[in-house]
Image (cartoon, rainbow, N blue to C red):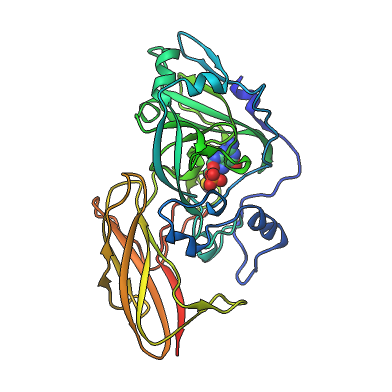
Length: 370
Ligand SMILES: Nc1nc2c(c(=O)[nH]1)N[C@H]1C(S)=C(S)[C@@H](COP(=O)(O)O)O[C@H]1N2
Ligand SMILES: [Mo]
């Protein structure tokens, strides 16, 4: 059954590759960028991102799901296979959690050489309040057998990726899947999920990069071996060479972003700022620990000053930070970096890997002060 989800084909399909030196964004990448939109950085003024401003990443097409006939199956290494509709899912005790989700490819377009894929700058992030049933409650009813080690989540969307035709699917270890904050979410910010965010049901795995939170969920299959489908074994890996096996991508590395100050130039998005005291703010998050420090630099990363960090609204939600910049006339490069309680911080130059995964290089904002 799992084999049917992942089939090598000879369909035309773009390979994984690095851009040549000086190669610009192609029309193919522009088509991806137009579909998969980033958070507008000024939307970080909201604790909870309005649904329409949350970043979107859809590998294939948004599937056409009829909620009246849709069902979720829970099968594989379970004593009691289940099939349930939305009404049955809503009968489980509902839980709401604010979660900052980030795409593992965030920042990819800044890498040199540039992995050719969805060309994110830095906005592939957003925070939503997700409401749904706890996965652990549903799995308790299905009763995993002693042989279950992995849980495979499959969506209703279908496509071909690097020659492999597939339904989007990801495996997660049973131990991680049983965490009480892993949700089968049917609401985003108090409303039914929007089509692009997984209507009618998605998985939400707080703290992990977004690829784990499978949208348009149709089946949950427990397996007695680690899942080796495309999205686990090939796509979401940190590789030094496109042909490496690499290491799996998992939890979100610490990162901070600022709302660019002043007003933008339309074409370049460079900032025009009035001299004097400038209030800066933004957000910081980590899926691996708790953010303990945010620092801001006004001189291209030569010197750093502590920002004020506010309490986060939840363990897996971003925290707001503020700082005051004394802006003097001239051209300046602003940047911000966060540190978490595991000691992790952000590198000034992003750590390179062949698929542009899980990099957390610092944001740079160019400002002209007048
Ligand atoms: N079924 C399915 N689930 C999916 C995806 C997808 O293409 N299909 N994209 C994943 C990726 S790579 C990310 S970053 C998040 C994005 O979630 P969002 O669009 O709600 O922000 O969904 C994940 N879940
Ligand atoms: Mo992603």
